[in-house]
Image (cartoon, rainbow, N blue to C red; front, side, top):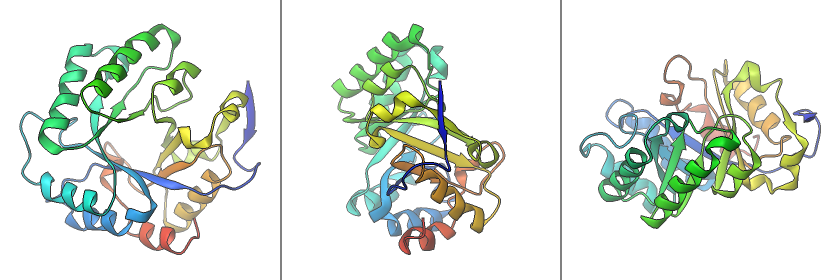
Length: 237
């Protein structure tokens, strides 16, 4: 059952969840930008190489320490391949993040959304928390079975381009839960003006956490727009 669209409803305050997929040596300014944005950030998702990588990347400890000193939560990227990846491999990535980079949370990507795999994801999240990941973000990229919301601190119920976000509607049941349980991620926003429009639209959805980028292509999350600093600092979002 679909509910009201993004143009209807009360505006709400937002915080920001940033997928920081730019390598620190390739775009050091982007990582400094995140420190500047610290008061607005709910968390930063760190992705060394589609996960923690095979070995520690020496470029990351210093930038992660700077974020942590600024009071920013960092979570490590772990691909679950919509339930096709063995649970043991997923948990091994969680352990690698915790051991190498001192992150205290995980971002589980490409999460399934159906009831048939809910128990599998329950096992993964329980194992992650047992190993010290005290903050879990799930990314099915769409609204999943309601049971998934019980597993995570935050669930991403939209990931996609701006052209699709402009048409987004939400099931009525999401409004029975706090907006802090939900996040939306939007890419391919055409320019700075549309970036502001994206944040304003998000404030009218049942969501507390949001991020939008002008990035596109195969890795849109490698772009952390400079315009975010002014947008978030002046309250126009």
